[in-house]
Image (tube, rainbow, N blue to C red):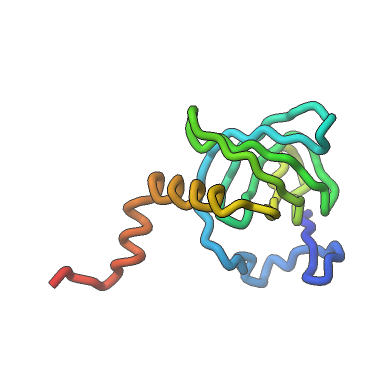
Length: 139
């Protein structure tokens, strides 16, 4: 069963017949290592991204989270490039591990958003340029 937060902040069951992709920012399929903590003094755990955007990510983790759980995330865009960001759990597929968990980023610096866009462009360059120049024949 999948749960998410309604626009009023109350938990509600996801309607599978409705278009689930109502995001403002596009997202890109990306499998990046993620290290996360529930609180500053909690131990770190690891998972990976399923998709990523400037506004949030879907991460796969071994433990369930309550809605509105705040997390400190380190997302490794490459072996040498990491992004420290804060997020809130907005939905989770709690049927079985690994749990797919929707994270909305907050207090995201513009530099972090730029890093995500550059990363997305590098891994999906062909897809993005095909979309931007759809129907253009270069004449």
